[in-house]
Length: 195
Image (tube, rainbow, N blue to C red; front, side):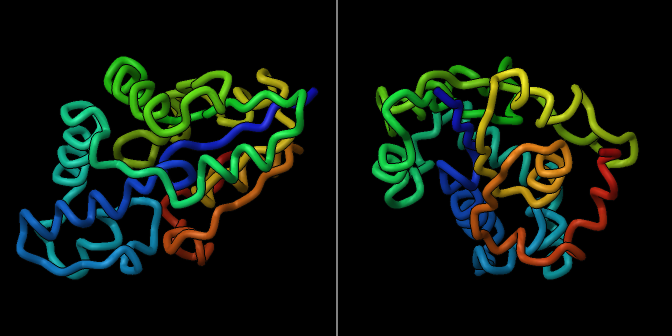
């Protein structure tokens, strides 16, 4: 028996297109998801319009997740069927997210249950991430620490910085093809995770 782990945002749910759509609605812009070439939406789009700030993106994300309980977040096309195909009979499937459980836990669980039903075994909230200004290194440990504790055999991820950290720890990782993880140079802000 093995544990297959999947990130939530950008792997199971198409969060960034919903955020970009809301930015366009609020600001009267016409950004596309292909313009989001870094993991941080604001960093990608602020070069085109300085009104796109981390605060705006955080407010929109919070509204999409917590206030609307993820009702506008759609699972990636074919995600549920793909999960079923990936699993072997005795495998466990665990969703692992960096989302803050206190802030977004209830809504995340609701959206996962609504979209994936009984396909998965658990959702783990790591709280792992970078400090607000990205200068203090990782907070709450490393994603790979959580994955190892779960007995992960393969992790599926959309964040290049997390995928690299997981791979450096010796775990197998699959990087989902997304516009924001195409070039290593787009991750200069994240620097070396120390592993």
